[in-house]
Length: 363
Image (cartoon, rainbow, N blue to C red; front, side, top):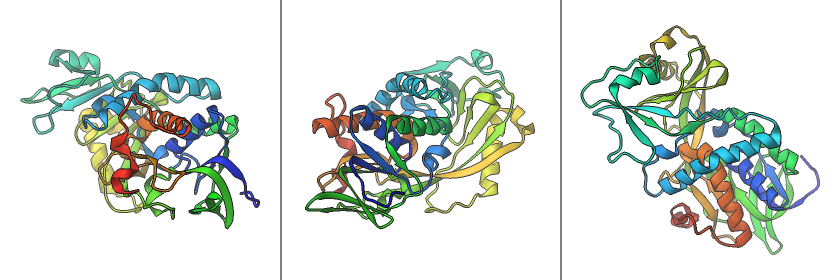
């Protein structure tokens, strides 16, 4: 942590995927950028997720255009990142098999990118899947992708450092203030100045003292586990209460819960076992596979479950938070939209960003 104050064009509070992606985009546009992270880069919700890029599963009409734009952007964006860093992000294009039931049917009408699979072909599509057709049941193949979010976080961290972004870890921001000279970020008692400050602190963003009302963001806890198996799963498998995500090297990620219990990091063995049993019901061969890892994460959920990004009531102070379950998917598109808005003084006209404005909460 530097003992002397610095000045950057832009300071970002939080080095999750949103903050890192934004820093990379701003640096590509020539801005000087500093990120302050209370812990380690990309080690909170960014590290805990499953890496599902579920743009085509988004049915909320307010969010779907942004989610679909993010999904279309991802292949090129991920390829660029891999070229810059020489690191794989584990990008997979196998898609998702969604197992619908009478209690939890597929959307009607089926969104773009959803294909109903005849029962006779399901076994050929995913031989390990234990699927028995029953009244109201169906398998839908969704043209979504996935990646290894931990590998993505490591690649983005390398990319921003290579680009000249100043990334300070173990450097919690104490407060953001505004005075006659502009915006000031206090870290370890030292004032750091910038023309723009972005609160990208995820589930912790509401706790940051700042010159605008706090965003209504709270932690939404999720239990998860992983297995190490040689099963050749081709798709992400999903029902209404569990998902099974294959990764390179035989790792299989299983999740997840959504819990409102604050920042309680306690792992509940019964909850984890329930998730495992649900996965085994889909893929019986997983019953003999030992659990490799268990963990939980804290997603940033907003009051209306939509992202919150854009300028606030305080000139120069911006928010980029509240992405809930879509932070991985929306990191690249959020970064590009915000970087453009900061440079041009307005949001892109290609997407309606009004549903995500901090103004809807008086921020």
